[in-house]
Length: 85
Image (tube, rainbow, N blue to C red; front, top):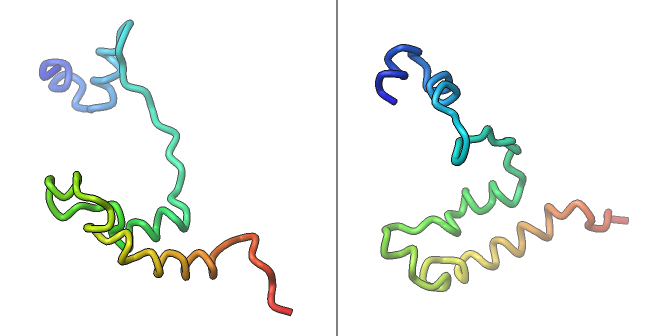
């Protein structure tokens, strides 16, 4: 891998040069984050503060604490909500 990278100077070209049968890397179809993805990231709903926190219950990490924020956010950002009369 190092020799191929040194020869090509490109990570993508190195991957392509070393691609063979069996396991391989594939390009991802990247989708821009939606409003719910941004809400989760902004409020750190799924981000543990430490590796051990990954195994704590959601209530201990803030999902319950942030539930009212998410509920209010969804009320105002749902595409199917009723328009005011």
